[in-house]
Image (cartoon, rainbow, N blue to C red; front, side, top):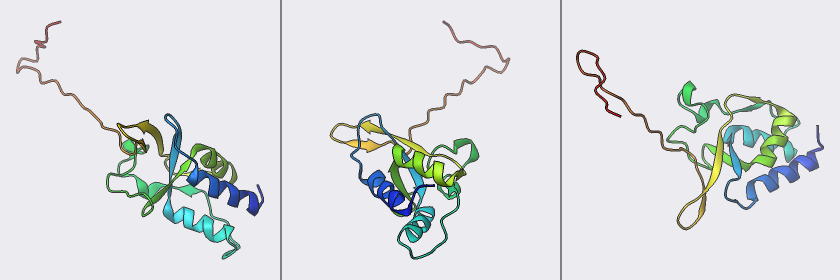
Length: 134
């Protein structure tokens, strides 16, 4: 495992790195991040356990997406993929990995936190024949 000083440097840099179109950022539970911060500042001598993001999602089938009501800097913090990879290497991860690509909007670069999900249902006629013409 890296020294505390090296971990401090990674923690600092992975939150302030400028966003670039196509980059990946990751959501980290603010609870876990605070435990990391307490360790890195010497407030506690116990390092945090594995990264756990269970509280950030709502349904197991959508484990890779944030729950709709989650708010950045209240429920989670966003870190650049380089930092994510280091913390996973040092501490491991239990629970979902929630990645957020950087997307270009009309005026800015933003994290795509909850991509739109489109479901299409086809209603069959009562006799179950499919009347869709090609």
